[in-house]
Length: 344
Image 1 (cartoon, helix red, strand yellow):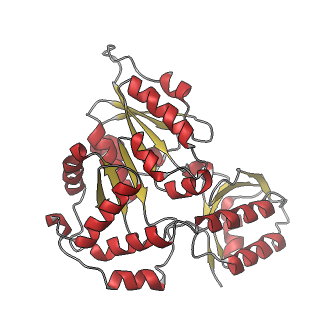
Image 2: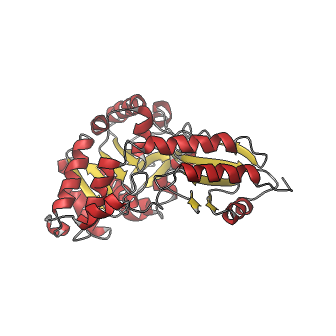
Image 3: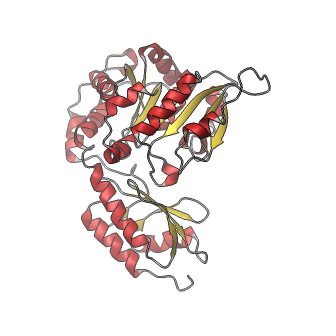
């Protein structure tokens, strides 16, 4: 039995999801005629209290679109120093939008009003790029799934509006955050100009993300989707999977969190684990002992059919998801307790 904890992107469509895909009504999405895509976009916009949504192949594309439609070349955006948009999107901020980036430490990746306001450039100073956008990430992937509360977001939103700055959310795992905070999704549309949500991570759809925006920004968002690679034509098969995921897989995210916390309880007591980040949602990140390398530990886990990934010079990441059940959890705990490294 293989237990794949590398990412929540490795999930396989369930029988119910496959059936929904095969029975999907389809058309040409680029012509705006795919009924399943239209249903998905309307569903997502309504869920988050926003006016419009555009279905795209990936969260990287939706992030890049959101940032592009809110900025102009030579402006500057503010984000966490480990943000996905900065570290894991191939330099797209510079190439696609020609913006510079001011990176901040945050509290486990969560930016504060004070930190943001201290880093806003003076628009009258021609030596500095104009600060035009703040981008938040929720949950924060580099910080083991730490999350914002709606109260924190409300205060940031009020601050950036006072300073005439736009606000983007990389919500790749936003549903994981909402599972912990119980905040209403519809309230998010009040505070953000654009929101990117991913349907192929915790929710288990095979492909797809959605960029949420205003009606005024929708046309430009579709134009930039075309410029960044285009639409997917008969995308209804994928949209149907995403609709199924929204209808069936949000409520069960708490199970992923429960299993992650159970793994965390074990990891923090192992002699070859030097440090474990707090386990807030479904991501575990831990530092291995000084005498070990992540490669050594990943190799040892692979010998027992447990898959994890190196996530830094000394770090390993594990992610629980809908294809990890309690039998797999028990096996992983058993393996973690049994393996040892003579050198640690």
